[in-house]
Amino acid sequence: MTRIDGMPGDEWERALRANELSLGLDDLVVGTIQGEHAVLLDYTRGEYYGLNSVATVVWRLLRDGKQFGEIVAAVVAEYDVSEAIAARDIAGMLADLRDKGVVIARRV
Image 1 (cartoon, one colour):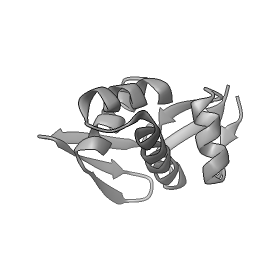
Image 2 (cartoon, rainbow, N blue to C red):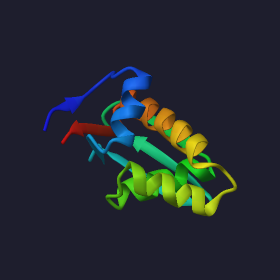
Image 3 (cartoon, one colour):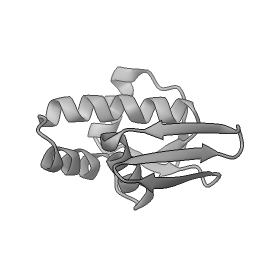
Image 4 (tube, one colour):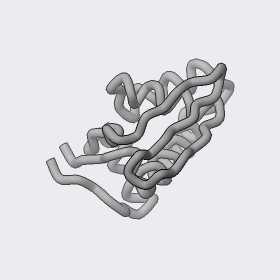
């Protein structure tokens, strides 16, 4: 598998939807859930990230080894959002976390 960094947004979302990427979390990023929100700490960079309730669901599912399609389905089931909007927004969030080094994506 080849690690993917900085893939452009349209290509990134297309690859996620096509199950061409395997997602994981950097082992040096730890998180804790407080109610509906989470806080992540990136030990390598000394950065903290606060996650809202939807982002917390996404992070929790990633931590549990779920992939893009499963994450989108879970968010659609839990929130009043269409699959297309959920997929677009989750792809954007994952790209942002990928660029920060929190999410690791590899081609399968």
